[in-house]
Length: 280
Image (cartoon, rainbow, N blue to C red; front, side, top):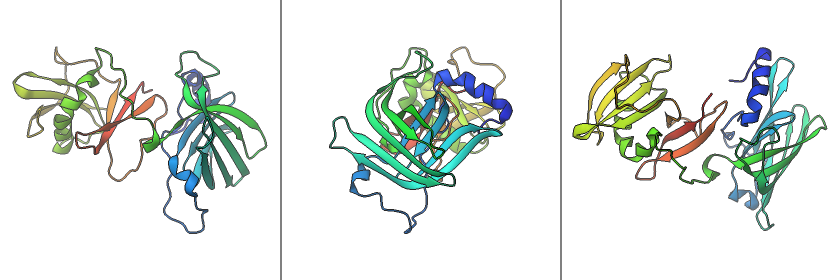
């Protein structure tokens, strides 16, 4: 959800943290009237770009993009229909998206090179630099990363107090607690191994309530599921990161207002969900 007029000041405050306006790549049902992406576009299916001076976000798919910029009444969004082409034979590689929307033509040119935030030296660099010509004729620069399935799957550096250091072992119990069904699960905010082959999983419901689920570490059964009243002594810190279960009806990573998304795969290679680090 994007901020209202009153939220624009908040957006400006978050800009030094490289606010991600959206982490998903737009997708559409097949439409024969849209231009074919062509063979060069097969290597990159999407990019996520953001600029800070002025603020803007651009989520690029193979035949569609979504432009987000602050407007008079909040965040203005424009859907652009076009084509993403990649030039892999160049060194470094480049990509170009050209799309039409209700306000005119947008052209974004991306080049693979390290790109740093213009407002904060605490924001991690992104691997692509963009120059965008907007429909209103203005031009701005920004930084991009590959989106969705194209994102590099590099194992993150995990701190000793990060509960996800045990994530691979805890996934069966996490999935059992989510599948139990007694509590609708928006996110898993922490999890920890216990004695006798059990695991503790802290669930957060859409209404913000939290519930502790105790399950067999193999995922074979759920022993208890109770509202949180006080944290067990061995429970790790919660809330950063959080685990977002995969939704089979939604393609691509979830939309987030800030922070970063990491893909989580189960042992067989199936998508289990997403880690959301540094959430708002």
